[in-house]
Image (cartoon, rainbow, N blue to C red; front, side, top):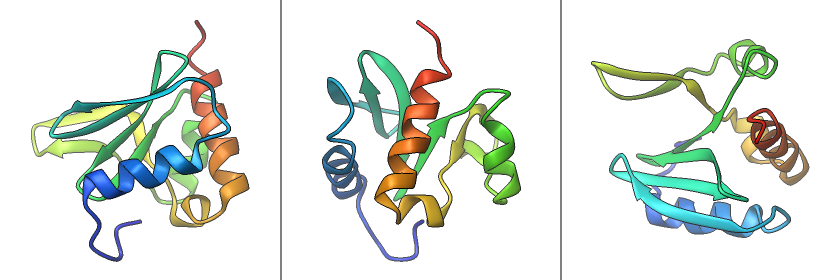
Length: 109
């Protein structure tokens, strides 16, 4: 997704606009980037011009099949519960919302 330079703040703002159909959105600074929440559920990480959705056993294969990697803010830290969103999903409003909803819905309550 990071083909062109974009700041985390610009990406956060863009995503909040694109996620406007989701309920009770909130962004908080985290990991040197941002965490995005819907209905209090932390479903998206914005970090170094890229963004990652929370995955579960049902959704992880979709990310892996697109060749996406888990969130790794450093060589020693990797969160396998968050995977980078594929470019073809990121550029399609409908797909983006569907994948975001799957991320949020996969967390339970």
